[in-house]
Length: 278
Image 1: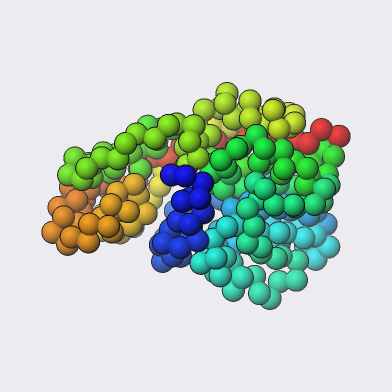
Image 2 (image 1 turned 180 degrees about the vertical axis):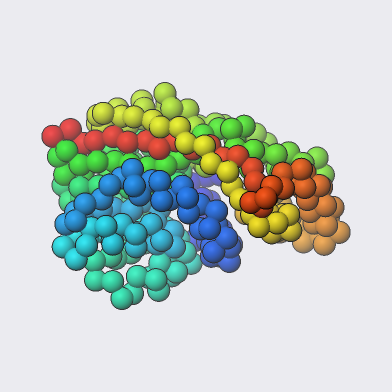
């Protein structure tokens, strides 16, 4: 997906689809979000930039951590998704949301103590330039903490349903693993090189494993066929019979992953931390 197409997607159909499924998505990601917020350790009085803030849930949590004397700026490129964030944060004086591309926008120099992102930094067309721009906005000694997916193969919650779906649907061309996209930062050595080239120091990767959990098979199938890799193809096909075939196959797969806690499949992420040298 080209950068231009990526931006258009999130500002139009992709953003609208995300908003339609935002409650389920946030419930799935909440345990990971909590871990990332704890790891970032925002302090009272700090200024924080939340890159790819989405519906603003993490921004609001960070705003609570920095308190009345702190400030959080949530940045995203999607108008539909930011409309949710604006509504949620309307009553809070210490949080604001801006529609900007954090990779290229003038974010100020030495403004923030913390650069934070939950799955929002993997879509940069020029990641070195983007992180150099983000580092410019950090104060000397400022912290960078973000979460990104490890490889598709390490994330069966996506890869297994997709494999079943693409036995029925025409499979897409395999992307270049370094192209902008959800798994662009799966290679820890490459990510480290990007951050070093952008001027960051003290770079660390922490591997986190988490069980994605849905209440039942129907809920899991519905979500994965809306938000998973096969979702766009099914929407374009607009073929109820085809959708039913794919749903049946994915449902059969997920039936083998029912636990007492619900339907569970593993996910795998990196928590990456770095600092702006003093």
